[in-house]
Image (cartoon, rainbow, N blue to C red; front, side):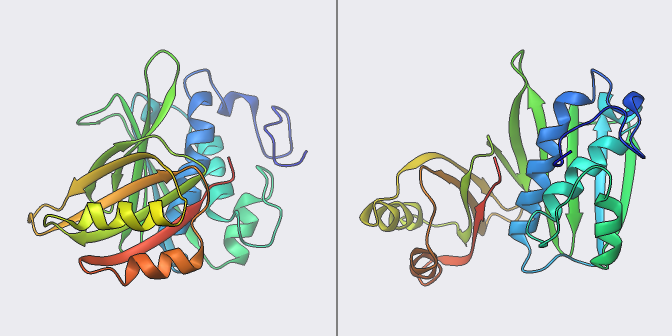
Length: 221
């Protein structure tokens, strides 16, 4: 089955992938992989919250999709059939909740735990994926294969320094969004790049004045 959706696979019911839920399956998997990239290691407890219209449906299959992303680098082949077993083997407790309440978007999926959080939604007639929150910073950027998440001081010049470093290393920025912290002193940059950022470049970024944290994330898109 190779991890693809099979309507009548063991422990997976076709009713769990309604027309409403189905567009969120790839988003959930991407959010899981992004959350993994934010954490140095997965926390013991991970929350997956479905809010809005999607929260009124059975989201077991969407939860399984998120787990596929969460354990994408676990060394195990993760599928809809064995995802819960992989979580148990890795010592990670999964808590999924559904609510029909959603403040700013029709639907949201949020994954949180261990001091990190990421949220996404599906927008427009084409069902485009959007990352709308990272670690309590509001952002708006589509997920992409190569991403950089930077925490930095909210002051002039930091964004320019980051762009210069990437440009000097022949790394093209395809998209970028900046979210300010609630207290106004810090900011978070989410950057999509055309090619992968190496460990050497990542080290250069984290040693840049004004940058306090750097996560390099490569999604299995």
